Amino acid sequence: MRVHRLIVAILAMPSAVFPGAASPELEAVLNRMDRAGAAFRSMSASFERVQHIAVINEDNRDSGTMSLKRVKPREMRMLVELLQPDRKYLAVQGRKAEVYYPNMNTVQEMDLGKNHALLDQFFLIGFGTTRAELEAAYTIRLLGAETVAEQKTSHLELLPKSAEVLQHLKKMELWVSDATGYPVQQRFLLRGDDTWLVTYSKVNINPDLPDSALKLRLPKDVKREYLQR
Image 1 (spheres, rainbow, N blue to C red):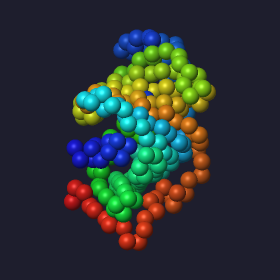
Image 2 (image 1 turned 60 degrees about the horizontal axis):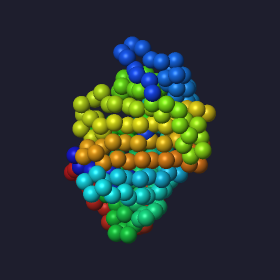
Image 3 (image 1 turned 30 degrees about the vertical axis):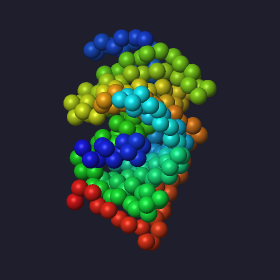
Image 4 (image 1 turned 180 degrees about the vertical axis):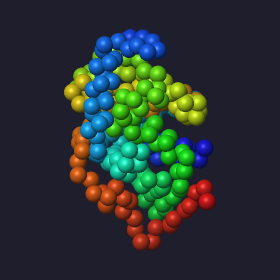
């Protein structure tokens, strides 16, 4: 799927859970996330990502910033700026995604269409996600308590229920802050056993983000390419 490949390229998170029952510890974590999700409107953060490429047993590291906000229950606007080691920018406005490569002075534009929902799996899980949405989409286990980035967290394992999502994402892990109910770290197990480990810092929940702060700043002579047309 070209959309998934492009998302990967640009940016390329114990107790048993039985049906209908959850441990008190897991209940507490999910309720904390539910309260955080209900209050969520926007966020900005810095992040570091380690991409492990299984076939060659190699790690690649990059870092940048992310800003996003929900304008409707199922519509978001987002700007991701990868700053190290190479600059790349991804902007999402509704169904439209744009990726800007400044070294080539090129922006690639696409209509996400039905694949728009896949973005939630890679960017929004734990930020503005309600308990009902999590339990509908994933089988959830609490793996224990851990300290990550000097924060006390609850470590969750999420197994997608959707066959479509499983084509791209085998498993996700979240390290959820005990203080805020938002992720401190996410781990994605992708097809081919590649992984992303994303760690957040300088997280600012519900900042005032005007639409202009979530758009690409493009030079007038930028070359534009249209994908999936």
